[in-house]
Amino acid sequence: MNFEDKNNIMIEQYLIARGIKSNSVINAFKQVKRHLFVREEDIFFAYDDFPLDIGFNQTISQPYIVALMIEYLNIDKNDKVLEIGTGSGYQTAILSRIAKEVYTLELNKYLAKEAKRKLTELEYKNITFKYGNGYDGFSEYAPYDKIIVSCAANKIPEKLINQLSEEGKMIIPIGSYSWQNLYLIEKNNKQIKTKKLDAVRFVPMKE
Image 1 (cartoon, one colour):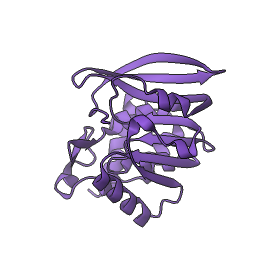
Image 2 (cartoon, rainbow, N blue to C red):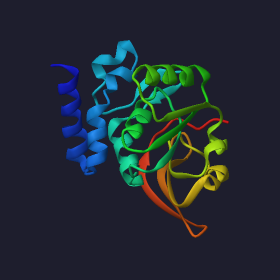
Image 3 (tube, rainbow, N blue to C red):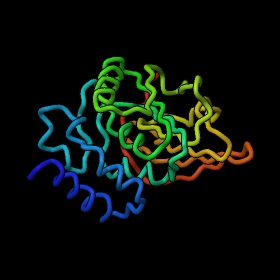
């Protein structure tokens, strides 16, 4: 079985069968091959539905959770998206197939460099990279229509709220190392609405 077949089976079994309905999300997963973003020794597991180690106590997220978070955000083709936690660049690549512009930030210098190299080699054109602290965001290009955070914060970062556009949305895991929930944050007329979603498990956001 080739990687394309494995990717299609992953999409059918782990995304669509579990309730992912967004055509834009499903089409993005069809275009991005997960085996290109995992370590060589983990290629056999690339299309299984669980996180994989990418070094430095970081992981490439479970495909279903990536799809779920993006679907909650309801990203439009004209949206400007901020991603906190580039990691290996897999979610970044998926976002770039849905949004108009993606701005991605990674605290680990090696992972930031490697993700930029890989995505540039793969000719992704609409991604801007930054090495830095996720709690600070990417203020140079704010505001953002959507923000997706791929590491668990101990509280909702105020600077990220400030970088969210009016009528913007942010999805973020909040909690301790052992217990976290996804939260959907919506800004409307300077009012902040917070909705508690699914229980999850992410690596902590570091400062």
